[in-house]
Every structure is written in structure tokens, then in C-alpha cells.
Length: 330
Image (tube, rainbow, N blue to C red):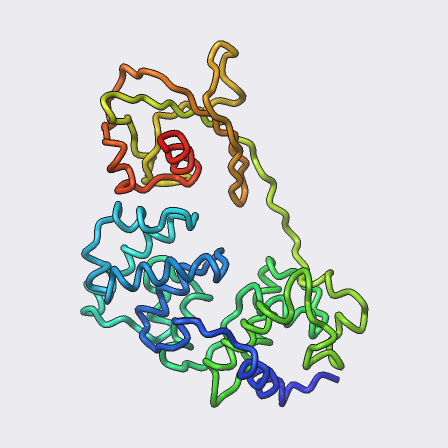
């Protein structure tokens, strides 16, 4: 039978020995913790760390971030993907300045009122900044709890989310909730990993239901699988006197408000008469993009601007276009 009473102490003891030294763990500043949580959504720590350092160097507090332009923030965000996070970062900062007089909230209910902050992020920021007793349930926590307790309820179902949230809150330490949350998330990231869990060295191996059933890789259970759709993007490179023509994408859809080369989207490839100078594929969470690049002179410059190629780094571009331009002009 699983030892619920000592779960928190055991996992926190593991954490004391195995935790990584990460800058956002050495502060209780809600602004910095908020930055780290938004950056690390759908992002590996190894990738997010550089962005966290870059953002905290540029923006010392929420006021500085609120005063920045959306273009600057998206340019700094380039490469992280899910650009709505970058846009919401600025919107939330403005909210804090206007609705909270520049004082970043630390209560989970107040945090959920900010743009781009949901149940997970609000719990994490509240827990790590003010030690609020609330469970933080991310992908790592779902995996750890589903394996330890053999829970087969799909984690992407309403029922599953309620079940895991209730269990996580039942297990949390009353005295050390922030450390408990850090510990269980770190345990999932380092010990109870998706593909190569260290079961033989696990402090819970004697009580792990999935290990006893020899079904580690069947947990957590998911009910939905995203079907990737294919899209065909044709970008046109128009160069005149060291300047290239770019346009801004719409406010909705992928890469919202980012800049791109003039684009034609088709259901399949273009005419065989047009030969691309470069072709590549770009994978998003639910879409597969077939990207072709052509050199061309474009007559219609309405709603487009010309930018010196040396200044293109000042504009937020999708990664696939940024890589193409660097390769072409270097």
C-alpha cells in the first residue's frame, strides 16, 4: 500500500539531493517566476534558460516590460514558438500596471485574472512566490502520479484533470508546499522520465503500481491524438538595393503579428514553371508546413514594407524564415 503520509517528505528528500540549480528557484519575486513559467510552457529547460536570462536582463521589473513594444517582445521571443505567449506577456504586464498599481499579484485567484495565466501557471506562481498551499500539476506531475497510483483516467479528460488535481492537493505538504511542488516536478523531469525512467533507483519502486504491473510506458493515459494538417506555404524573396520586402501576418492564426516574406498559400505545390530556390518542412504541434522559397520581383507593395537586410533582426520572424534568410545572405 502506498505511504501517502510520508510521500511529501520522501520526494522532498530526493529533491534536496538531486535538484538542478536554476535561477528562478533562487527567487520569490513573482515577476521573475511568472517570466520563467510562461517561457517554460511547451519548452525544455535547456532552451528556456537562455530566454529567461535575456528577458530578465532586458526587463528588470513588470513596468519595464509593460512599456516595451509588442514587436520588441516578439523579436526577443523568436525561436520559442507559441507566440501568443509573448503577446500575452505584454498584455499581462500592462494589466498589472493598470489594475494592480504595478504590484504583481501572488494569490492564485488574482493571478488567473491576468492574460495568459491559467490554472497551472497561477498555481505555480502563487506557490513559488508566496508558498501558497496549492498543487502545481504539469506534465511531469501527471506522469509521476499516474504511474505511482496506476491511474488510467485520461489526463486530457475533464474527469482526469479533476482526479489528478484532487490527488495532487491531497499529497501536498502543509508546511513546505512550494518545495513539494518543485520536488515532484523535478522528479518527473529527472527520475520518472517519459522514455527512460530510472525505476531501479527510484525511492518509490516498492510502491509503484505501474512498475508492479510492468506497464510503465502505458502511463499516463491520453484519449485524444492531434491530427496534423498539411499546409503549403510559398514565400517570395524580393531584393532591391539591399532591402527585402516583408509583410505582417494577421492577428489570428499561426505566427500571429510576426513578419514574413510575401506569401501565397495553396492546397498543393505551385506551377512547375516556378522553381524554388529552397524548400523545407516545418513542424508545429498540429500542423505540417511545406515551405518553398522563390526569388521574385513583386509589383504590389501595398501593406508591405522594405527593410534593410542588416536590420531584419529587429523584426520578429517565424523561425523557418529567419533560418532561410540567414542561410541565403551569409
